[in-house]
Image (cartoon, rainbow over all chains, first blue to last red; front, side):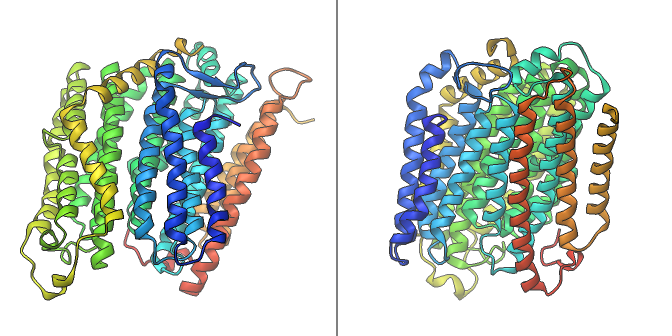
Length: 487
Length: 104
């Protein structure tokens, strides 16, 4: 159909509910989880198998490029994004095998989760705006259902409705922006648009750019449009929060990067200031409002808003180093935030509360989860042996490189401010248990611990040996910056 | 036959009507209609541009993206309306301003 990477995800997302129909209800959560985990593993194995070939030249499907045919281009930047999405999808699936066992309809849950990852992978590989829009909508519509999956809980229905209304406006705005771009160039193919836009900035081009950035910015949580983020992250099941925070927001930022460096290099001068303003707004609001929260999942959601601000710093710098730093921080933030949400989910699974006060002293009862949570939080702060440090250092260097020292200083100041609420989480983890309620809490089950330990190990590994992922990000940014290599 | 810019103006007016509906209305079903109006504005734009570039030739690419997108808009409407049913069961009302379980 398309490529084995996307096909295996599609096929497994169709057969998972069929298998779930024939298995007894008691064990369907485990069996369907194992089946869909197999789909992720096949797809990831094929991606790793063809990775050396991708590094030399991108693979096009279908091969001929006429103006009408739509295409999927398997290239280096898309591989970086889809590797993150596939890894997080696999971990979330293994995690859900125990986490979702009390819910009904789990075969459909795995199917929707897989369709969402398919949307992320397909959108990151899309070579034209048509394919991008279809896979984008696939990701959006499945994520709405997953956020409101516990339909008998009041707050999850409310969060899903808030999320749908904002994100639906975003999708419509994206479609309108695409139609303007189509009207300007007569094609939807990305390299062709890039070639035919060389003429210069007309007012309609600015309108189209504004609409596309607004539409994708709703998903990426740019500050005036971030209202759905804390509600949706807090009300969704934890593996879903992990994958929305770790892969879907990252995809939106990735698409913004791709469009900016691909289609709009003509008007480069004006968007650098524009994005530095957004970066500052995101950092200020995310970190200050994060300090006021008591619900840990909302706190992590605001920290996500702040981290989107850090990623925008690299885009605002506009150089190759800046784009490398942005892509690297995107990857690292996906790992860190997913780990933090999964650890929080393990704690919710045992104590049934999201409140910071209720989890005081949990470190004595759940040592492995708490250690992993500490690693995630230290990574989000940017402590040296972890992967968050490397990408923040690169972001700071890219600021110096392009003469925006003030932005780099703000990055350091707001990282320090953010330590204020991360320290509260750490304090709650290591405090002495206060009440008797926690005395019979045990360590999380093994299927929940496996993905947590894998992610924590990956964070430490990429922190002390960042070379492969750094070169991957560098190669991606050089592909994004030279449109001519695609033609 | 109306000129090309009439179609563009029509699309932009529809977009503004959709946004106005989303900002002022409180009933959830009206909000669903607002989002659908926004999507249809983009569809009209695509169809108008498909006949703009080469006189006498209509680009099939724009037609196909509109047809696919109508299907996607239908999916969106179905999901949002089914959540509306659940919201009505929980809250007993369709007024979005009275759904304040989560503090923003």
